[in-house]
Image (cartoon, rainbow, N blue to C red; front, side, top):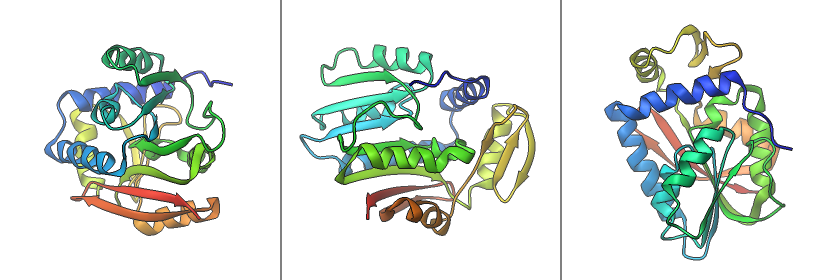
Length: 220
């Protein structure tokens, strides 16, 4: 069953789109390093799922490598935008759906990508990661990018730039003036603590300056 998009998710997507229109240098670095990381993690013949595909930025960077790429997003506008942006590629399919109820069978994908979305899931983080584990093959790579524990100042500056209403910030956990919307950041130990009970482990990572980590996770 597909979850309907909530007002807080719509607001969050709107703010992220504003960031993408004029990103700070640190975010440009993140996008470039993340793209390179994902591309080197995919081989010819792989079936890839991009969860939270947005406007299709990641899909367009890997479409010539992967055999098939599925983009999943909970926002109908993102789905339509990505369909438009990838219309010339026969090996791309875009689906409306939730990261916490992924509409695919167990052990379907060679690579699952979850780019800068886990940070916004609050109490549903483990559920989303469990779903990614479920649809990933036993030897699959699950690539997850998140804000790092060093990112508080850079994030605060970015939120100010796009006029996000901040109610509070404690240890990098921002609560916004939009009901129920938060955004978090994680250390390497935070990630280990979160994923190990799910039967996942870190199989490699890169740090992006003082902004983010890009992790490769695998099934234990």
